[in-house]
Structure formats: structure tokens, C-alpha cells
Length: 181
Length: 181
Length: 181
Image (tube, rainbow over all chains, first blue to last red; front, side, top):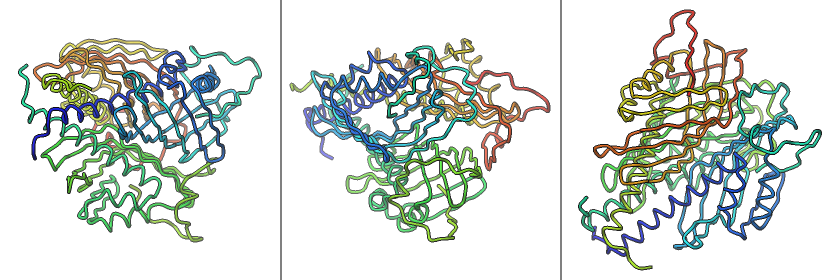
């Protein structure tokens, strides 16, 4: 194999570094989402971020960072446990400032007030843009693979829950009506 | 540290790019497996792919892409949910066209007709070959870490299942006899 | 974009190679932990490794490779199933020989003698040092996100468990008093 030029090698290294940055971007997103860290998550979105959710039996879209953050804020509260793990990153650079990514989500959400345990899997198909040297989430497409919604008859023995300590308290009697992501 | 030569740097970059490609290969495999996408999965195998499954209480081997695809085809149907997530990739390049990989699988399979829910973990020890510039799965060795097979007494409340919509329908009364992977 | 110098490109490649090595280090740790492979896991720790566990309702620290290995040895036995999966690696190089990493753990531990099933999630915040060309685990900080401890009323139908075959046997009547990690 002929040795490539320095410019070619530099470009390939940059692509690998970009892929690593994009993975960290999405990992940080999931971590901040599950810990209701709104300030940190705001820095990960493009101002014109879009979300398109195909939940199988429900569908919704939104546009803009503020609306996305509203959804995250409304979705998290003290009477729940969320776990969203993004597996299997397949990241493709389209250009030095644009990339696509496919992810395989495994999620589990306990809603203790609503007495529901929701588990499932989904595919993410994202688009990322590099703006001012930083990769941002631009477009998120979410497609359910499966979802199971079980009633919680006997509450599980939760010995610790971060959100119980750190997320907003539900007022008495309120029913959360968010669509889990 | 002395600066390496351009050829040395180029070789190291190529190794990292190869590792990234091999991860994507396996991620695509799991995604296509769980969504019964036979056409896409066929492109990931070497024609002489081998599979060696040590399930603890069962063991089987097969050889050749057609037999592997038969297994994938027989294993998937509309009355099931499969989730296979490959974690912890430890990829080692042996040469520019040969690599080994260790993975830690977490799997969950609901078989609604057979009324079984199978969960577990396993180690994959794979070998990959680069053929014509493309990494392919050549040898797959699967070793169970644990497996739990529970009867499904009350069916779970499945609100959506991709395979129910997209996989082959079981004829009435048939019992699937595949060995889950 | 101006082409960087060979030395700059070489340094960036080295950083990416280091990140890959650190991921493999942690993946090997989880694999060896769950399979009670004490010999292999010993090679992954710095002699002055520290562990700081904030389990929400419990907290403990230890220092030194021997004490860490004692904990691993005491924690594993034949009447349990452990699964610890480290997701979402966010690795940052501080210098050519020092790095930090954040991980999102998903864990499940069945304790059949104690009749408990413990599941949860946690954040790891690690520090790694490169010593003689090899990355080692130097400091481990563990913070619970959530933990659920359920009694096992009816034992699950375990068809295979690696630890049952390979880990130390519990003497009759003994109660394990370890703190699961």
C-alpha cells in the first residue's frame, strides 16, 4: 500500500476524532437527560434542532432548542426513574462539518405516580453539525423497535433514585402527560 | 518521544479506522438481526463464515453464509421480540486484513407463541477478514455467561413490536424449534 | 484548513489510540469482574488504585490493589449471577500519561442464597495512568443513579450460569456480606 500524503493522513485522523466527539456528544445527552441536567443538555443542541418521534402508536415532532428543552424539563420529575442507554453507534461523516449517526436505544422508565413501567428499544437516526468547532445535535429521528408498558401493582423496592433527590417535585394529584422519549 | 515517520503514522491511523469499521460491522449485524433484515445482514458475512455456539446446555455449529442466513431467517417471526446488544468491544488487529474481537452480549427474547422469556449474557469471540476493502464476519464463537428462561404466564402489554409488523407470520399451531442466538 | 505538521498529526493519532486502549481496559475489567477472573483483573490496576463508592444509602472507600482484589474475590461466588455493563464512555486525555473517563453503568446482580435481585445504574468517574506504556486504572469513583433491591420469592429458571461452574463455593449457611459494586 502506497503511503498517503500528510494532508490525507491528517484528514483521516480528523474524521476519527470527529466520530469520537460525536459519540461523546450523544453519551453526554443521555447522561444529562436521565439526570435532568437541563443546563448541560442545552449546550448540546443546535438552535434549530428538530425531533421526530415515531413511537409506533404515537408520533410527534418539535423544532427548536427551547421546545426540546421544554420537553426534557417536563419529562423529568422526582417520582420516576429513567434509564436511556444508546448502544451500537454507527457514525458516518458526510463532510468535515456534517455527520449522520444510527444508534440502538435500550430504555426503561418507571413512573411511580402513574404506576407504569415502560421498557423498550428504538433506533435513533441523527444528524450532527459542527458549528464553531463544536459538534451539535441538529436532527433527531426516533423509531420504536418495541415497547412494553406494564402496570406497577406492587411498587419496587427503590433503595436510591437520583431524580427523587434532584428533580422537580410533582404537585399532589398531578398526572404527567408527557410522551416518554 | 521521537516523532514517527509518515508511513508509521499512516499505518496507525489505518488500524484505528479498521477498528471503527469492525465495530460498525458488528453493530449493523445486531441491528439487522433484531429487525430480521436478511438482505442487509447477508452483506456482512464472509461466504465461509462459521458459527460455534456454546450455550452452556446446548451446543451447535454451522458453516457457510447460506446456513447462517437460514438460521437468522428461521429464528425471526412475527410473534416475538428480540433484543441483542453487543457491549464492550475489544478489537485487536492481527494484520491489515485480519482482526479479532471480544464482545459482551446482553440479550432478551420474548417468544409469545411458546410463552417464554429468555434473558442472558454471553461472550462473542469473533474473527474478521478484510476482503476487497470491506471487513466481513468470518468466525463467530459464542459462549454463554448466563441464561434465564422464564415462562410467560401473563403476556406483557406490548404496545408496539417491529417484528409483528415486518417479520414472517407463523402458521397456526407451529412451534418454533430454533435455537436462539 | 491548514495541514498540521507530522508531529501534530502523530500526537492526535496517539490520543485516539490511547482512548481506544482505555476503553478496552475498562471493558476487560467488567468482563473479568463478572467472570471472577482475578488473575486477569489484577493486571488492570495501578498498585495504588483507589475506589470511592457512593451508593446513595451506603458509602465506602478502599486503597491499594490488594484490597481491591480482596473485594472482587469476596464479592463473587457460585450462587450468584453478575452483569455489569459499562456504557457511554466519555474519555478525556489530560496528558500523554493521564486520562479521565465517565461511564454509565447498568448492573444486575442475582444473589440466590440471600434471595435478592439488585438492579440499577451508576456513573463511574475514573482516572487512568499510563505506566511503562500500559494504561492502568488509578482512581475509581462510583456514584449511584438508582438502585432497586427486590426479594426473590420464586427463584428464576437459570439454565446456565458461568459462576456456578467457575467461582468459589459458599460454605453452607454463610451469608455474603459484601457490598455489591
